[in-house]
Picture 1: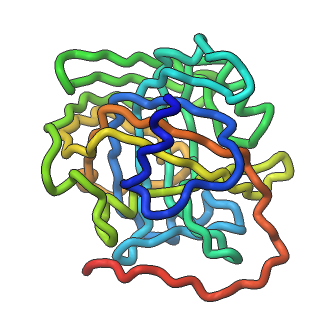
Picture 2 (picture 1 turned 120 degrees about the vertical axis):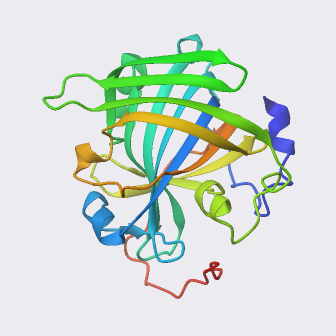
Picture 3 (picture 1 turned 180 degrees about the vertical axis):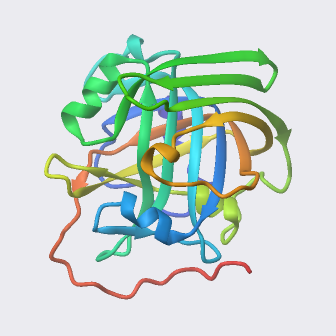
Length: 268
C-alpha cells in the first residue's frame, strides 16, 4: 500500500515527520454519531483532555468494521490481522494545554487475543475481548454482532447497515461541515503506562464517504460507561475502505503554557 502515501490531495496539512510504524486497512465502516451534552462526556475523559465541540455539542460515535492488511514497518505482513472484525466507541477531544484536537477511543472490541495483547502491552487502550461476527449480506449491506466477554453486565452491539452510494455532496470533506469535524482527524490520543495522554499522528486514505441507513437493534457501548445516548436517530455515514498509517505515539508536554487556539467558526 505504499502508493497511498502519495495521494494527499484530500489532506491540506503535510504528512507527519518521521516514519509511520503501523499500517492497517479498515473495510465497510459504519460511522454512527450522536450529539451529546459535554458535561455527560467529561467524566469519561482524562483530566488533560476536554470535549471538542461542533455547534455547542460534543459527539460520540460507534464504528463497526473489519480489518485486513495489518503491517508493522519493521516486520513482515501480519496474517493474523486479516479479516478481523472491530468495533470502536470514540469521541473527539482537545488537549487542554496544547489545543491539539484528535480522536479519543472510549472502548475497542476485538475477538483476537493477539490484538488485545498488543494493546494491553504498549498502551492503556480500553480493549475488550468479545464474541464477534461480520456478515456481508449483499452489495453494500452488512450485519454486525458483538458481545463483550468476561463482564458481569451485558455489553452488546447488534446492527444491520448499508451504504447508499457516493454523492457529490460527500465527494470531499468540506471545511466547517459536520462530516469534516467527525472524520477529518489527524491524530489519536492514547494513554501511556502512567495513564497520561500520548499523541499518535494518523494519515488516512479512504474511499468516498457515503450516506448510510442502519437498524441498530442493540447498543450498550456508551451505557457501559455510564453515558446515556439521546433518544434520536444517529447521523450515519458509510465508507467502503480506509487505509490508516499510524506514527509512533509521542508524549504530550505537560509543562507547556496554555495558548490561544484558532478554531474555525461552525455553522449554526
